[in-house]
Length: 82
Image (cartoon, rainbow, N blue to C red; front, side, top):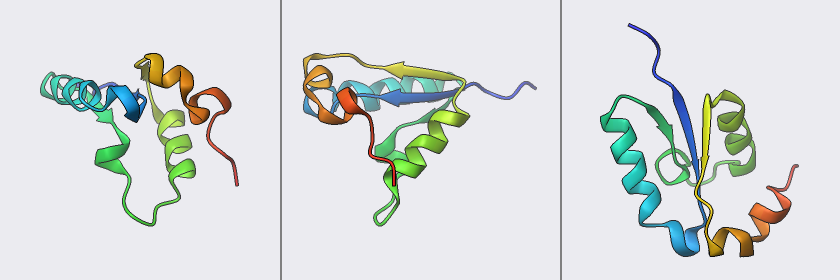
């Protein structure tokens, strides 16, 4: 059995908070290994490092582009590196 594709889902909280988890659920139900920060990041996590690692391991990156994503400082400049 082949390894499922690893899908990283990126979105703006401002206006993608409903669509992203639904997309994750739909993809997971179809056998994809999905990464969504709400499900994967824990309190006290080094979120920028974990996101970078998830991006490095992703086979597919889905960027949900919306008005909120273009207004987000994180999307425009990227996560801060420590």
